[in-house]
Each structure stands twice: as C-alpha cells, then as structure tokens.
Image (cartoon, rainbow, N blue to C red; front, side):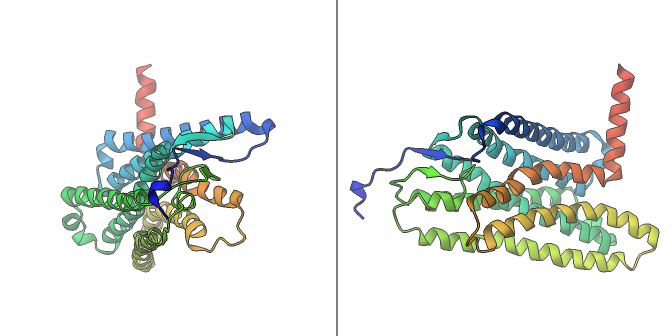
Length: 310
C-alpha cells in the first residue's frame, strides 16, 4: 500500500457498554462508586503499611506496591468508561488511545511479576525461614519492585513502538470500553503480523510468572501440611488471600487472551475484561484486609486513635 495515500485516523470512538437509557444513571453511579471504593481501599493499604512499624516487612511492602499498580490501572480505565456511560460513545485522540493502552500494557505485566514476587516471598518465609532475613532484605525488596516496574515499562514500550510503525486509515470505532491491543490492531490497514508475534512472545511475561507461582505454592502447601494444626492455620491464612487474588486475576486473563474467543460475543469480552481491569483492583484490598489479622489490628488502632482525638 502506498503510504503517501494513507490518511492516519485522528480520533478514536470508544463505544463502551451499550446500556439502556433507563439504566444509565444507575450505571453511572455504580461505576463512580467502584472507582471511589477502589481508590480508597488501595490508599488504605498504602497508608496502613506506611503508618505502622509492625507492617514494615517485605510482604506488606509488596502489597503496598500492588495497591499502587491497582490505582494506576483503575485510573487509566474507569474515567473513560464512566464517560461512555453518560454519552454512549467517547471520542478520544488516537494518541490518547495509545497512552491509555501504554499504561494498561505497563501495569498488567508489572502486576503479574509482583504477584510472583509475593509468592516467592511467601515461599522463602515458610519453606526457608532460616534464610528469609538474609535473602529478603530491604535492598532486595526494592530491587525486585524496581525490576517489576522496569520490565512492565519495557513491555509497554515494545508494543507502542510496534504500533507506531503501522498505518491506521480507518474505521476509527472500537467496540470496547478501553483501548486494548487487539481492538487497536483491527483499525490498522497494514500488516500487523509482527505485532501479533511480539504479543505472543511477550505473553510469556504472564505465563512464566504463573508457573513460578504454581511451583512456589506447591512447595508452600507441602510444607504447611507438615506443620502442627495451630501453626498450619495461621500460615495458611497469610497465603490464602494471595492465592485468591492470583486465581481471580489469572482466571480472567486466561479467559480473555488465551482461550480462543470464537463465538464469544463482544459483550462477554467486555465483561471478562471488566473483571481484571476494575473488579480485581477493587477486590484486592478487601481480600487482603479481611483475611489478614495484622492489617485489621492496625486499622482498628488508627480508628481508636482518631475517635480519641474527637
């Protein structure tokens, strides 16, 4: 195709969810509430970990970083989605669409890697307790977190560089509530085989961490069963929340990206995408708070101190 005759599309139309008029106000307040709950919940985790010295341990440090990623993800996705509820269709520039995809593509692998780091931290704490302090010190924690962010940024940059080399001449309508890779590529009028191949290669940033998590928890569960019943219950309670988050997170990713979506409706794809872009960031702090006694104790102390002041 002659590139000189190609007009690059300037704007993207996000269709979002096709919601009946009578439900628009309800869905608007629902999404606003989800956003507020997600932000407040994750900020609470960050605040509790920063406030209490008893939570200055690697596991809670990693949880606070996970909350930061969740805040970035939901802030990247939800505001535009709320806009599509009100006006039925959101118009954004092509570069704004790429920016939204960039932050999404940065957060997802970073979160996968961070969940892997948390599982490795639990493996060392439970299976190798004598070596835990030496191997998981303050410096190592920061190095691991920085690596998660850097690898996420690298993956996102690879996608963006590849997309920027493609030609986009229309149509300019995306039947989704955010700019994901596949909907963006479907707008291209040039060959995007290379982009798909890169996506498959970079998909190992999700698959390999998942296998590491499985192996880590296989060893953890094996070690837990060798403990006394009282110790077993306490140790398992610290791991069950992380296992729940991993199952929800990877379960939805597998349904959207790995299972062939032949016959899968656009609405079903949107609903599954909604789970890992909105539901998971909202539910993470709830799961970790409800199943973690230390977090609940610190939160209780903060509330008591606040009530004493007034």
